[in-house]
Image (cartoon, rainbow, N blue to C red; front, side, top):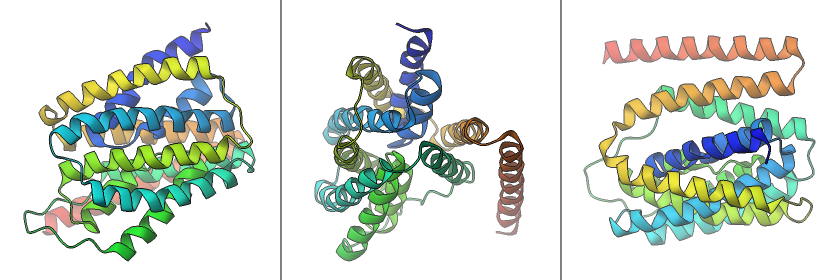
Length: 280
């Protein structure tokens, strides 16, 4: 067993913690972990991440369901649409060059990180639950499934705000329901990739077991951790990893330019956010 694989297994706990605590973010970490630490080729890393996240999310649904935090009807409607999009995205992604996939993944990491750092996630309202807007949920599911199926992202940080804004779910229910949706479309995206990509199952299964343990720990301690502080810390970690992806995949001069652009954008958005808070 290589040193990179051992390190990947240790770090896999963090993937599970993210899923258990926040209902998303696992694949944002899993793909770079499998690619740069475990040494998987990009297409295999994306396919393997879908299996790892799918299994982990499915197991994590159980404790959330026991707390009443899973809205099954909403989850299955959104998830069915996302599955269709994820399968198409998986088929498309398996045919694209590795550098295109990884750069696209880096861009998604940066966008996700900025949303987390700026705390853009919708707030749960205490009002009555809105009637489910079926058409919007289906369209949102298709779009999220297509994008995340192509680049291998589970999409939790896209799914949770959609569930709150479009489905009228509370934040705890959105997190639990997000895990159901992620498991559904991760397995479908995996099916799309497996039409042309093979996986070394032995290390993937070991990493999956460790990730599941991390997710169960995250779920158990989720209600004791301040979500806002956790989101920001995790957001900065994802931002750094997104920049690392650019340096790994692009020529040095373009990697530096991308890093400068990302940091300048972060600074601008943070300043604008502070001004908005001061003005309110």
